[in-house]
Image 1 (cartoon, helix red, strand yellow):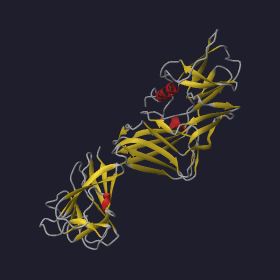
Image 2: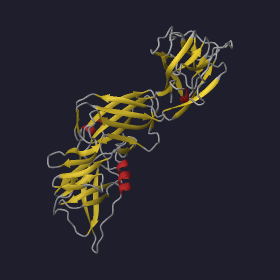
Image 3: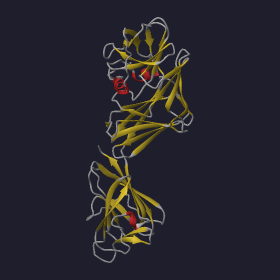
Image 4: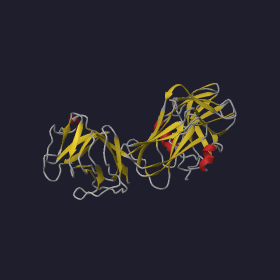
Length: 422
């Protein structure tokens, strides 16, 4: 891992926060030597070492006083260097310096307790923390930082494009918000105050963070340390707005500098649900009487618009499709079909439907004119029962059909699941 990049994102955050320098008639520059945190579990898990970069900024409190913004002035990518501050007096060696990294303009100190903020939204950086907090103090000119935050590292592989990664406690614990960091002991302790946020999300606006593949990609989330008696849940949102949850059973305790590692494989499911309980769910509305001409009807699911094409039986008899009994879709008889939507970059994986009648033998097929006998064909159906049919093949951009093999197919609702292929 390129450790120069490890803290590069911090410099961006700090520069965005900004800070002003003191000025006076007799301006002097004072400096403190700085080094990264000691090796903790955060480092031992991945063998990383925190590096400093140009533009990094640090909150410094002198003898419990005001929050000052100090600039890193050492070498870019170094593991140690100096931070400097312009003021009207030279104070190094004459009091106690407490430092918080990264710079937080709203941070305060009272005795041995620093108050800062864990952001509920963190910006994703490749091979880097979304956010991390470190603290140090010195009575001379040297600062050695230790972590105040804990981490969740989500390692993902599989299919799909990741848009965001979020973590929350299963018992609604506060994991973001105001963070109290106590530096009175040998190592810092930290906890969220009474009010806080229950979810932390790593994202980069609406942009795709990573395209997944066979090799795992890491998504780091900085969070408040704590104990999660019922565990945690990681929610991954893909670019198609589908979500996948990965649950960690509890109890789990994550101390400052420790990393909770979560591994997952995604298949990028996109769910489309067609509800036939009302004909007005479709545009144009489903016909009240059975029709024998092909018709296409659109509907919306999860903010996306799809279409289903209904086709009557081939011998042009009176059987076709229509809105039945004010609560069901009627498709009949043999060799009529529903033409399922094709989505670019996805392939049909599974169709599930709730039966409204006792007859009908539907099955999935990649051909409307020559339906093949399939192992997933349903031989009969009971009213209200749920039936699921799964294809053994997964081919992108391919047209599939839900075909009525015999009798009349009556459907109350239908769910189509697609699986990502890119």
